[in-house]
Length: 217
Image (cartoon, rainbow, N blue to C red):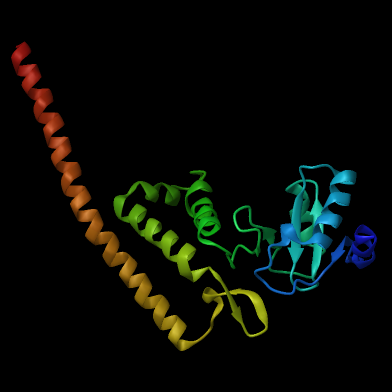
């Protein structure tokens, strides 16, 4: 009886060639994976498309779609009404998140590190700048700031999947400037001691090397 009621609540809809589950989340922090209606739909999708697919969510049309692989995401995104990309289910907290609207600290750190560090392919000269200590420290603090605050989920207006980074106010811009300057200062503070230790380490190695050469002579 319960399965029959859930089945009756499943509403399928096709938007611009994309067919999926039409289901509006009551709250942005809903743990989607535990929702009975969503679980019923996902089970049926996996039976027909396999277990290795990807669940995507369009917040504009409240549509869940199940894609078989990552290659389909870009193809489907051009047809969907959501020009800002799809949301995904977080493996840690179970909430829906967007790349610019992160749900929890674990997922935030994971996505920010993947974007700023692990996505580097060293195809451009500028990407090698990461080997400079001051650049590395700056990126590290930027990742922390973004994951802990800047790109975290926040309701702005009627959009529950927005973030602090999307606030367009003078105070927000002033805050961005202060944070940017602070990150540079912190990077310099931590870089200088590192460089001093690094230089001392090099001197010790070179001195030890030369002393060995003299003994051999």
